[in-house]
Length: 238
Image 1 (cartoon, one colour):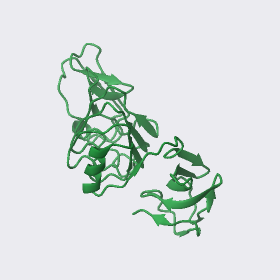
Image 2 (cartoon, rainbow, N blue to C red):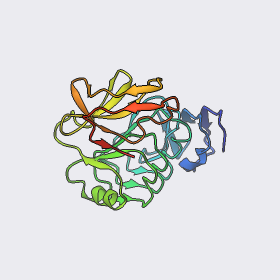
Image 3 (cartoon, helix red, strand yellow):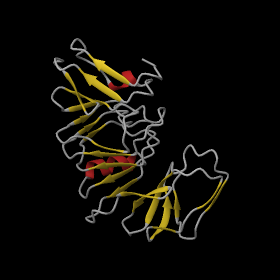
Image 4 (cartoon, rainbow, N blue to C red):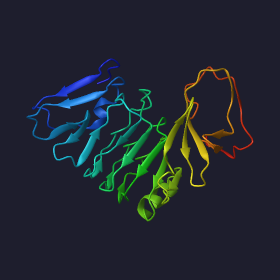
C-alpha cells in the first residue's frame, strides 16, 4: 500500500506471508503489530520478524529512536527491510547488526541516505549485490570480517574497521551537532540540527578536532546559505 498517514498496522492470524517492501509507500508507519495467534509472524518492539525471530522482515520507517540494534539471534535481514527510510525522513541514523546475521538480502538497506552508520558485529557470508545500494551510511566492521570487507570494497561503499578502543565509532551529541569519534581521536560531523543561514563550523567539539564531514550531515537544511570550514577539516564526504 501507498499510504502517507498510516502510523500503525496490526496483522491478523490469517496473514502468514509478507515481504518488507509491501510497506514501501507507508511513510508515516511507526509500529507494526501482529496478532498473538499468528503462526508465522511476530512483532518485536514494533518491528516485524518471522515467528522464530530468524528473519527481520520490516523496520517501520517512522519508528522512534536514532539507533536500532537488531536482536541477537536474527540470521537474515530481508529484502527491503530498511528500504523506506529516506522517503519518510526517518529519525533512524545508526543500525547495529549482530554477529548472528549471516544473510543480508538484496535491497535490505537500499536508499537509506539518512543512515550515518551501520555497524556489523559479525561477518555476513551471504550479501545481495544491491543490499546497500544508495545508502548514506559508513559501514563499521570488526577485525577479521573478510567476507563483508571484500564485498563492500567491490561495491565502493565507505567503511572502517572497528578498533579495540570502544570509544571509536560512538556517536556523540554536542550542541547543534552530532559527531562520530574517529580512530585517531578526532571528530567527524555526521549531523547538524541548527537553523541559521550562515554557519561557521567549530574547529573542535568537546576538545576533539573536527577533521571530517560525513555525507548527509547538512541534509534538508535549505536555510543554510553559507558554511565556513575550520582549518582542521581534512575530508568532506559527498
